[in-house]
Image 1: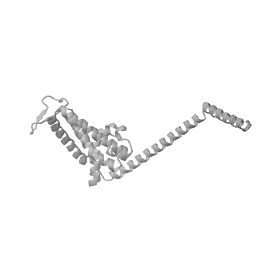
Image 2: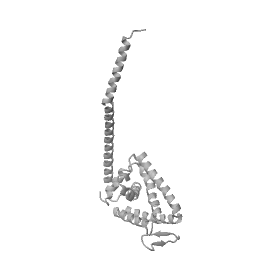
Image 3: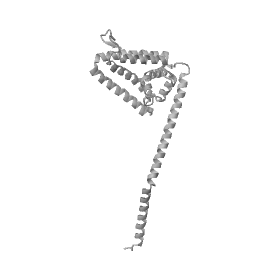
Image 4: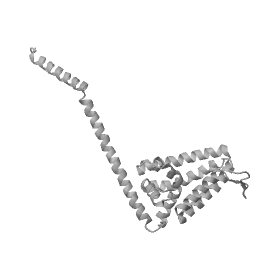
Length: 239
């Protein structure tokens, strides 16, 4: 899977996000994760000297790691798709500006608490979306880079597709849907095989425990004792 293969990456993402409720949850909670992460990155040291820009509201935009990640995200998105990704890149830059203003206003002692609470809320709701509605583990367990780098763009692309029927090029959604359906079918087949294999292993273990030499000897002893007791009852004179 190539780094800029939008079709393959979006199909992989879509295979983990096929339930409407789970998709909606990600549309709402993915971008706040990026925003609040940028708030925390505001407090990283500048990459260059004199890299602070005085803004009109007396805040700061600093060329630090938050700015670096913003540039990486923006340029990577534009490399995936010119139209939708340009919008995504613009939103990433707005997140950097807005998070910088918020972080400068709150200060580190309060900002990290806000970030922690927001991150816990957003991640928890998304895990619930996967566990309760999607019934499949999140993509980050299989593709960590995609989960953190591509997810903001993919939820935007999902929204543009759902509400405006946008597609990067003709036939994109049809091919992606076919790949998603094939991936989900394969995943369900693997899970069914694992379930059957697990049940088979459990049955084999129960059989082995039941007919192990020790259990077999115990059963034979119990049968022998029962037969002896019955014989004694028959031979004993009735009172």
